Length: 246
Ligand code: ADP
Ligand code: MG
Image 1 (cartoon, rainbow, N blue to C red):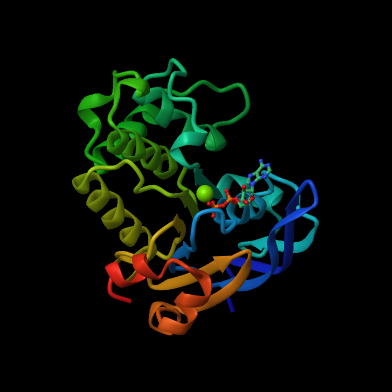
Image 2 (tube, protein in one colour):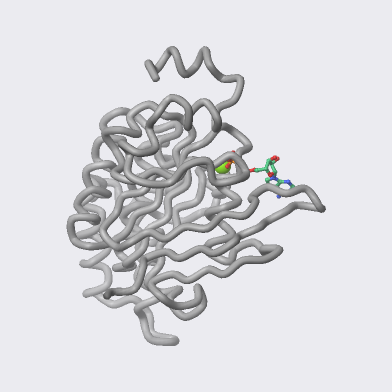
């Protein structure tokens, strides 16, 4: 059988002695579009960063595509939460996407015409080819998020991690992003998306990881999207739940 896309065993992460992620174990197989859902402060971003070795963990084993993060780094694309990115950094849209091709470039080799054409192709896929010469700081939230998706596409990754890609994003950008994420999964790639609310979770994802420090639920959307399980994760946020009709 093919390697699992994601295999997490007994993951614990804390900040200065406070546990943010506790005892999480799960396995995700390739070709899934997985939502990581849970209230604010539930440890979703922490979980994502720990899986990518961007922050240290207290304990736990992480295998991506059957290997350690270090061994598969080139095959992993990560789009951080928008407020984790320095948007004043002076870089054009095309260059930001070209960075995505760097893992595949040989050492000391500069991007050539072919790399640039590929970067433009990725920009076209997200509908941003007309903005290639703009500074990333000049773009709207939705446009920025599409450019970062283009960068992930340029990397030709197998595993995609996106942290709250729909925050501060217009409806049409959101639709474009969702469409592309679904296409990636149809191609057998695996996409993991942090999403802080439950609305549209049904339409967007086929599996859900429901997190509130601990793993509250994991499985198909049908399995996880049940009142008792949701209540457990979103303790005290019943008004919100009624609003979205859970
Ligand atoms: P989410 O992404 O689900 O909103 P986070 O993973 O950002 O949650 O945060 C989980 C918990 O860890 C929160 O209580 C948050 O305050 C805390 N936390 C996150 N990052 C840090 C940090 N760098 N230092 C200390 N505490 C942090
Ligand atoms: Mg977060």
